[in-house]
Amino acid sequence: LGGSCYTSVIITGTEDAAMHSETMSSIQFGMRCSRVSNKEQAAITQIKRESGREEAKGELLAELRIIDEEIQSLVDTGRSGGLNLDFPNSLRQSFSDNMGKYYHHKSALATCKQQVKAGQTGSEKARQYEESQVKNLQGILLRSMTTGV
Image (tube, rainbow, N blue to C red; front, side):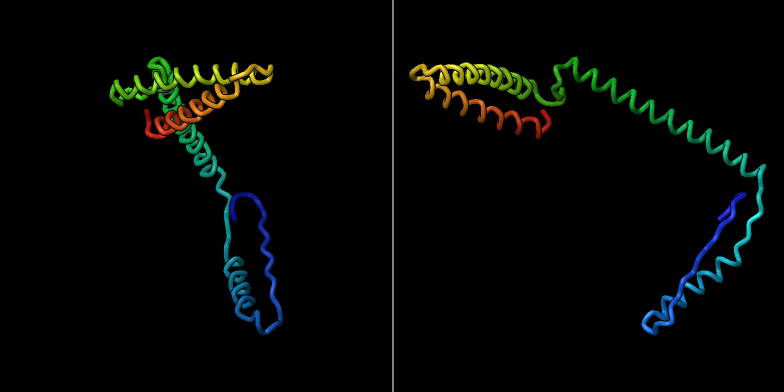
């Protein structure tokens, strides 16, 4: 309710006795609204608008600096292999070893699936083994990632 605009407030009521309290509240609100008066203060409004822009600009620049720092942190993390450097080297090495095993078994599983399709004997048992290894390593890697390695 301000500035150089017109404001309208529409109040509704009912004669229903069950809604008497709501109707009275609406009427009282309407009466309070009718006492509001505004004077346009163009110069003050303009100053506030300009200072608000400068403040918003400052806030945006601060956010950009934070984002730049986060990007740099991600780049630095990428240089370290994507592993949390706060964890002991043995845990990071174990994670890397498990990733290598995971990719090895996943590749072997794909080969076994092709052999099963081709009807080669003994391939189904190998496929089952590789599939179990892939699932086990997925669980190990997921646990490692959720603990922050």
